[in-house]
Image 1 (tube, rainbow, N blue to C red):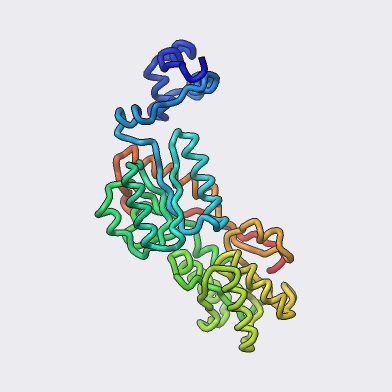
Image 2: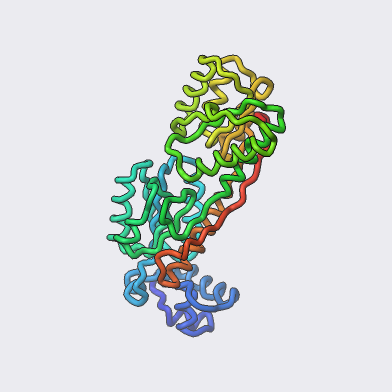
Length: 331
């Protein structure tokens, strides 16, 4: 009988109406947790499959969501995707994940492709500085996360300013006087806000700010390694490094090691993101932790609310996710 059961039979076996079964399967309307448990037990036992095409005809929805990320190999983004997928799959949605590889033209192609698939909405980490045109060209609900381009409507971000402050404060409290900031040369909103936190910490502790201490480079291990090796070769004085992400911190750490500069004795390092390598490297890196699980759950919740209300974006709604300092060995 597996796979052959009907909604009528599910209703009879679970002791509820067909309408209630429909609400449970479509995650639409009110029903008790006990009712949901009874219905889903029957569904799972007999392997009932929702006909998405038929469902789409009834609701004008495809039960599919697009997710666009700038670098799927980046652990921070990968963790967010996992949280998004987990949340959406539980609600019966199909997820299309697109990697823009930090390229705006690729991003445009992905948006066009997702629109052609009639996705119900998009969760979007953009490489663009302005997304006004997207709302002109497409009438799809969109939630922007992590980065804040101009004209983004609904936005979910980490408290990057506080993260930059906490990272720099940790270095200052450990006695650092000349603190470098390894910054993303693309200068997205995330980086701008982390820089503001870096500046604010200098002000709070009356530490002179030297703009030459801000080094803009690619957010990669190799680029950060080369940048710190150059700073050392140039004879620049520094005793602390705040890095825009953990991969940059790993590159900086290796450059210091290879140059005979002991960490944390001679120089202290703080990263950002709390990726797995930051915890298992030698020495483990002090970093700022972003709540990737909350990123995923909140983005799904917000997008589904937009879809339910037939809105493409809210009125400049911004949800800020707290961050925290994870103290390890390097600072």
